[in-house]
Picture 1 (cartoon, one colour):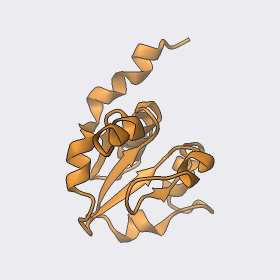
Picture 2 (picture 1 turned 45 degrees about the vertical axis):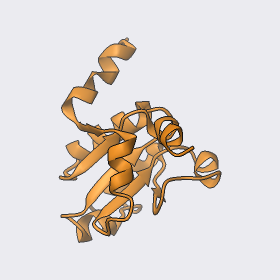
Picture 3 (picture 1 turned 180 degrees about the horizontal axis):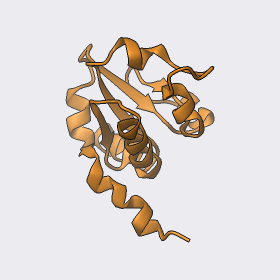
Picture 4 (picture 1 turned 90 degrees about the horizontal axis):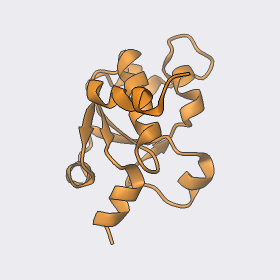
Length: 121
């Protein structure tokens, strides 16, 4: 079995930004925030214009020809995507998945919503 630290080492292969850096992008029309937490957490509040993309279906949203394919990525190849979750783990893995599937400009908020809430009290 893979160890947790090995799993999370993909953090070194993606671009991570702080919650403060993410906040600076909040009103940029070329930035789309993506919340990969569960639907219940998303419904209780999210960040700015974030859209919900369940982590468990991410590959299906991204794969060309998938019945769940989200055209947003194909139609906006130059858009910047900022991914986040609750505390950073799912966001890290989702960002790596998106990068591996061809999304060029994707970043993860280190610490996820937990860090976002700390700077927005």
